[in-house]
Length: 430
Image 1: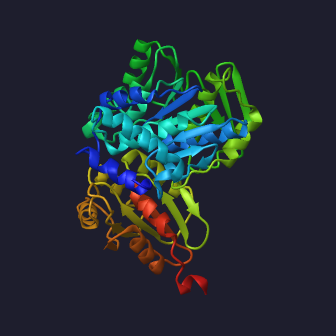
Image 2: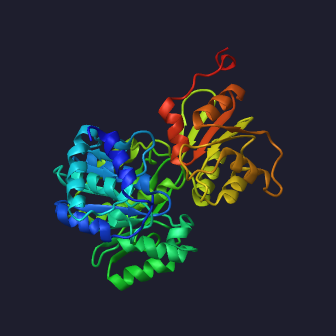
Image 3: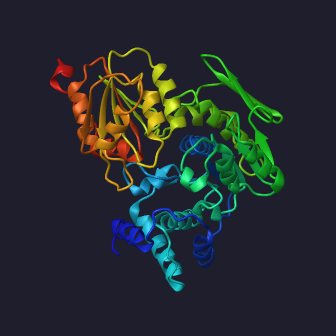
């Protein structure tokens, strides 16, 4: 195998399933790799807000002068986006020796790793060899049985918990919360930034003897239109600028970040100025990302009802636009009807798109799901073969004062970013 694409194709062939929860395979290979970290490890689980939380942790730690390593998934455009060292996306060539290491360790016992397990181990191997001051790891699906959980954490963060991946994690928030709480460790900080966490998370933390930090009890935030403040156990920050990441829910994520950094202060001290600078400079593509120009273009990877509800609130706060054009593509196993119903009042013209994965709902299926909604508005809708095609149609139809929204799966937003935003039609330029 000569390049990263060869290795990724190899990873896709090893296991018959895309998702096969369980740590036995990963632990076996990680043991042969001798995988260990010599720096503080922060793991982040939850339904929504994980990527934003990791990005803010990274931005603040970088401003404090620490060498960071971050693992997140999935990627938007290029696989290498899943790992950043010192704030920079890793080069494909840097990953290749670690794919080779994982393959050698796996082949000893012919362990059938999934794509996610193999690639996670390769990235963790790279990070462990990178002389980091802090490792920030986003947990993929769930927590207890996720491949990332093979690494013991020094501080666990659980962000908002809602209904998603129910076929794997359970039918309600309590069951899902119990799975997310699987990343907690005895005696180690457990930061919960969900303002109304499932009882199961609190129970699991108590049973383990984790140092539980609850929003509203152990830390809190307040703010006005200009600035906000955070208070935790024995420490307070005031006069903070709002995070550069847009959306009202980002204060919940930022509050959890400050709580986590407070628990690690002895090993990873950060100054108030580093916090201010980090929050002001943090970037994360595809999270209520607004592309400058006319018409307004909003990109958001909201792909479950909870995230779509937050997106709807953020769109409401943007102000008035004569017409909102909605480009939407999603996986077939998502709870599609509530998402479409939530966006229905805001979207004046729909562009449903196919996506390049067998897990995706077809554009036709999305159209039919939308048409079946009771009491929906009778607005135009069309189907398209891909996100780029759908966006091009929306741009052609939109007036300069309109708004185009691209949301749903990472494949939807990533498909737009892969090919670049199409040029505005002539009417936008005149």
